[in-house]
Image 1: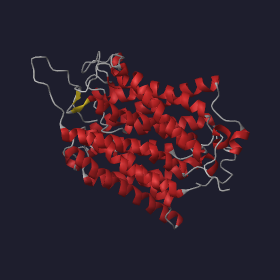
Image 2: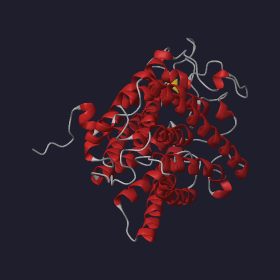
Image 3: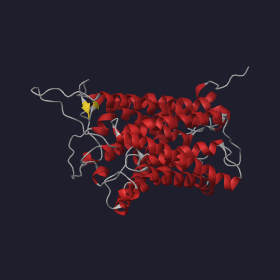
Image 4: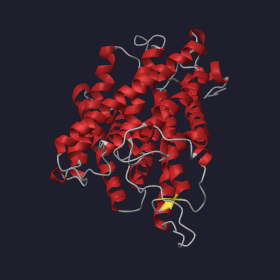
Length: 430
């Protein structure tokens, strides 16, 4: 992520530093856009793809995760992700992997505290919206069969053990583990999408398939909701990517432009392959392709040029089509709403291609001089993220399964989670 380091409060003899009003206004707007991505964007995107009897359960999960992570972010999350206590550039120690607790409960934060040229409170709230959507993405992999209580415990554990260290290792500043080796991740390719996508794959494997999968048809019950949700994600992603400049400047403007180009290219890429193979274009397909493009451009948005964004988006859309259709059925895992096939795969594609496309020789705006050397650094970052997320996600899931259990029983699954867990119906047509 591009942005200034946390500024120390000025000495009494110095004039106070005022935040930049333009940067602050943009970051307030970007923060609201990113929150919109989860509620209602992701909630509707996922909700439309499940069966009608499970719609409320998905909406509830996204909403509850938003509330839970907000409280945990105050208690210790912000501190463990962004505390710079004990960090030193080029030195690897415990604080290269996880922040301390010196900023717990937002200790030391006042209305005058700054991060770069914006109030620290605005930066903390902006980063909170990232922390919210990342575990919410995993909901799509376990939809229609996971206990609500288990999901809440999983969210708390996964947020603490997996998300916070990843955010710190990439965005923690000088002395952070992945930041120091030069991994480029402008807005969350590793921290958000590969992290959540791998967790989703592990979770659906541990949880097992839905009853009747793959022999029983389980079509989306309302693709209108899904397309509305995808549209909100597209809109909100401008806050996600352009907001990661932490300023209203040319980097933010270019991030917005390349986000639009990559998303459009991916939507057309998925649609084109689907049209060639199935002789028709589907609403679900173009919406999924657009999300793949949004994911792929995320790590590259601050360094890639428009031409690179076009190629990156098209490649991501086509690859994700095959991963979300052919690959899933070939291996037989039940990733309900294709969290791995879209978020992990597009995140990997985007993170890897960020390396070469950040180079000026390929139209990029980064400081990369040796594209293939940077590609190798990106490979190391991707590999580390896969292992980190996979191993720790498995640990969290097993601990919960050994205690309260992960999965609803067969009767509850057959009735649907809306009635079985929440005693409510999404539709009352009487």
